[in-house]
Image (cartoon, rainbow, N blue to C red):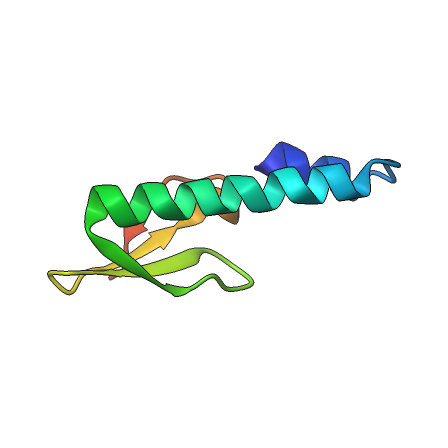
Length: 74
């Protein structure tokens, strides 16, 4: 994901392809988290994607923001 963003802003002529791959990657991560954590996306945000789980935990998926792993909000 981070590599896609770097390429997108590097002045590459294939911006549409890079953007399409980035969106597909975001969609894939969303499905993964929703299925594995029994969660619902609250905010795709201009930061980490934020989810709420069936048992009420709030998860921050940092992978799409700064490359850090997903964690539970405190």
